[in-house]
Image (cartoon, rainbow, N blue to C red; front, side, top):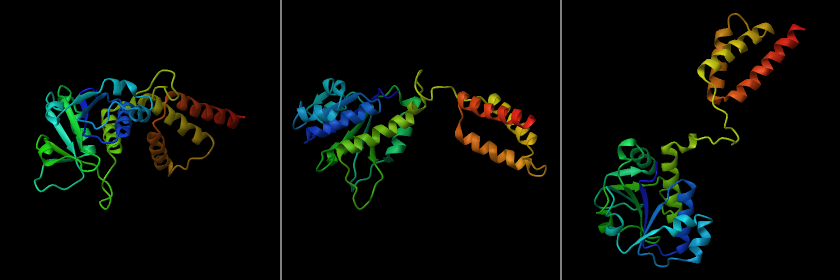
Length: 242
């Protein structure tokens, strides 16, 4: 879902930032990194900072100019912390992620461009961008390290794409979530158990159940967790029956 995004770094001075950006991308399932006239690359420092994201470094695209880097893109978003005299349509990083992970943009190649460590993007480079991207932060200290900025953007793309909802077979917590039908059976069981042990007051039973529903609905129980709770209820009922 994120294969149509291209991260572009312009005239990076410190090769360690290239490696750190590659690591950030791999953490968040992005893979297309493009470098525009990097000062030093390849570099052992970049490889070390990539911390295993060597596949991204080995497939990196290197261009002489930003125009070449974005030639195959339909949408270009330029990241900048500085105010500009001429205004561009602006997006926060979250707005950008939510906008461009939408299905209607999946056929488009989208470049997110980051400027130099010391001076960011120049105005003529922003002229090539349709949007200006801002990362909300402390207004008194708004200059982010370029790799840190890449991490924030990649994280928001990852979250907006919904990857966090994936579950792998065998992973802890991989049991499916309880269905509405299963939860309703649990609530009936819970009500009956509380009634059996004399916990419920006739005038307050509805409000208590409503509050308990809110608690368990917030928890998003999976089937194994629900089985544990119902086992506790059965034990309580059997113990009370004795």
